[in-house]
Length: 277
Image (cartoon, rainbow, N blue to C red; front, side):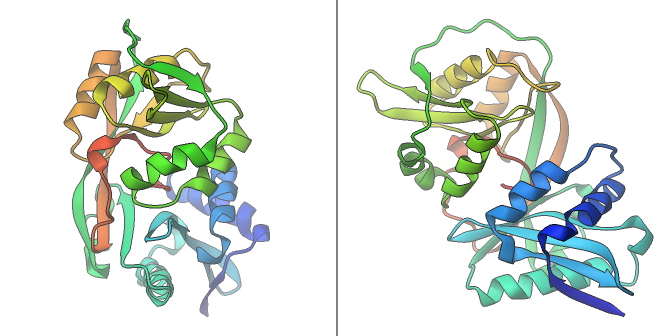
């Protein structure tokens, strides 16, 4: 007997196991799963089959649009349309809440799956990792900040949604790692959240500001290889990464359902995570 219900905190260990099995990894998703779930707890659902939790799908509410992330079905149950059933349930719930745009990232495996549910492929996002840092001369003033309201005022017009709750969660997880670039008048030209494993959210009004932020971020310590996931079709960001000593390592596909969010993707240089847009 299949059933779908809202996810709760006690589901996290089982859901973590599903994600690890589905993505063939040994590293736990528990930290990012817990954070993402708590951002929009009423937009996460689990699939149960015969009383056993076998699937999960969640979405983050950014106001004008929602972003689906961390969807998975346990490999032993990936048949009989279980993935379609779970995704369609989530989409129906989000539609009822009035979202005009729903976005997500997927591997190539989703190229045929997501269009069956109304998504259209918009572009390819590339993930890069630092191979050898190259020297850079900064133009803008770079400093650390905890003034999230000031950042949000700039970010909202670029990202097209409200990331205040996300930024607050990232600051709580790793304090003192939000950098801003300012011109001589003190006007913000961009910001970068240097998460311990990935650079993002990361936006800038110019390539120079993006390069200065990146150089400052590379002064910090990281847990493993320094990585950044670029938005789709972003020539400035790709050339910046190459110039800074990064190399591409993998790609993901960006899908949209409904109208495209009102974003300035040409000013976005790094994502918080594929699961967060």
